[in-house]
Amino acid sequence: MARPTRFEEHRWLGDKRSMRVHDLDNVTDACLLDDLLASEQFMSFGPDTLAEARNRGYRPCPHCVAPDAG
Ligand SMILES: [Zn+2]
Image (cartoon, rainbow, N blue to C red; front, side, top):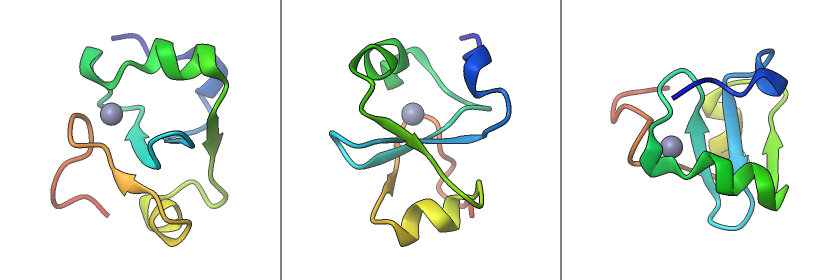
């Protein structure tokens, strides 16, 4: 799946609806990223790290985030 060009500066993208964070380097069809982008209920993180996403209460997406990531 192509990485969304509007997020080429970011790796981690949070879904505010499910409180999941996706790894844009590994995103799969199962992530339903098109649906997330259409909903506009997403956010990026500063710093752009999985640790920061976790600090904000996001859980790793089971489809694209490796179990040992971050
Ligand atoms: Zn995902």
